Length: 104
Length: 489
Image 1 (cartoon, chains in turn blue, cyan):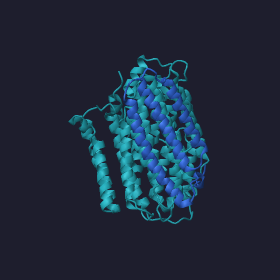
Image 2: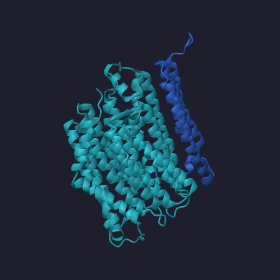
Image 3: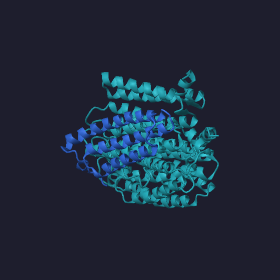
């Protein structure tokens, strides 16, 4: 570790800010690609928080959790993009409101 | 890893092997019947492997998984539900467009994810199990190729369940930051000695609870549930309402027992138990009231499942007031066994009626006169609905009786009142469907039912009644498991 290190709390605040940005994105965006990107930002915010926490306890566990999150996020996006292709093919549109036959 | 570790993992390993066999078989030789047979064979093998697994004793395999009788109980249930779903989906997809064999691969992987959740004792295993289950489910929901509702349901499920997962993950990260613990037992050690008045810890546990409430679709985090349940193919909705709920609850209960979740909140913070109690009461009351307004059977059952998970929270909250973990676990196992049987029976009938020739049978109006067209299916649905309403001599009565006894023991009066009011409301909408089925002279085409579907539905209906009339074996099993659950020192 170098002499000047970033306080853990700052990293956590940054992670929380990223998480909030992603959450707002999910709530306000209607384009499915942007929804998936916002989810990805939230996932990475979680990863950053895990790395910061791992650094606090000087354990590798936080980084391992981050690698698991990466794998999970990739799998989720793979299925998500498959659904995006279907949406484009059927509705010629990437707006999630294009498919809204169900009540509510 | 020693040989004994592998033996304890036998059900998981067998199912993994089975998944690979089915995957390879599908790539080389497409046949609906062969795929179904191989799927059922893998599930049977995994079920048989439960016993050698149990013989290896309650055993922690790596810090991640705890293979004990509690996990085996849930694994057995998930495997059985997986087999039922495979049978139902075989009939459901018949005549629908697109390739159909891959569904069974997804089903096996989802079951494996649920089994991982039931034995998770570490945040990493929780994350992996949850995501293996959820990601397979997104694809299962979207499976029918030519219908639009499944696609919409899958997109909504993916986005909202993804948000739920990330909220829970962020909560875990903050809990890890505050405590340095990722394993449930380590967390309990922290609860006993550590400083719990940490702002990050409070934020972490609130986020974790919100995340798990998303997964259990407790009000107010339920908004995805009715749409996804309605849009998904009927067999998948049944799987969602049973396996996905029970797996999330299994890991929550283990977390609450092993990691002492209910004691996690420090002085000055809102107690975890209060948060859960508020969510539970909301789910019981609002869930049942909203169910009254539905004219879609799947949406109605969605709200009914929300209310039932609300009832189930009583078993969790008893942990906070009584030093008797065994009673809480026994109550939860009894309730879940009954809930899974009756919910699956109801969805089995819906699925059997939704053959490709007629499309999804979802409106209550379409169930008018069902008794005169399909007496057997209508009887099974009636048994399932009466059981959901908690009528005596059904599994639902025993399930609610256990919750009630536990609630009285723990003096959780507010929750008990909510359960009584909720159950009273629920009788109305369950009977609404039963009465619709008895109307004479309603015109609707009778469709030939498949043998496998009829047999599955009948067996489930018999199980619902058998558990209500002669619950002794189940009670003994649940009690044994609850006594043997490893408790943190």
